[in-house]
Image 1: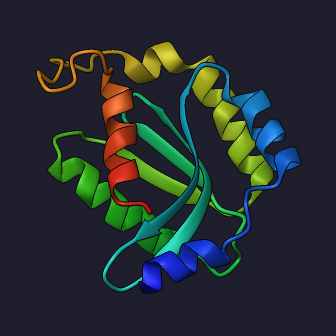
Image 2: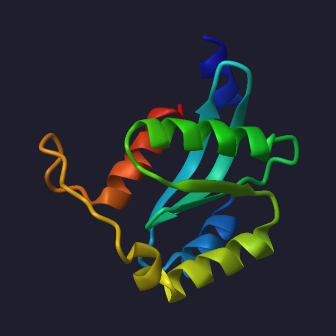
Length: 139
């Protein structure tokens, strides 16, 4: 019940912010408006991008414990078999720059990663499966 109340208290992502992030996302695997929940802490993420072994999130919430959210989500994604590094940023400009860089270097970020499609989800790419793992820890 507490989680539902927390999500209802959260305002939707500002449309201008969404459009700005979207303009830098290119064809990266993205997720928007997520509320991550863990035993000790929770936090809102405006956006998350996945490319290769890189996962980068952005939160506009100044109270979010980005180090904790990144550490906990990285542990869970790794336990699901994906060797990723998760970073969560509070500053928009560096986040947008990171998206631009990920788009520019996506081939090298994906280079050498071996992936066998999951029989349960044969149509999903590795990056989409990582995204869905992250969504599983969100409300």
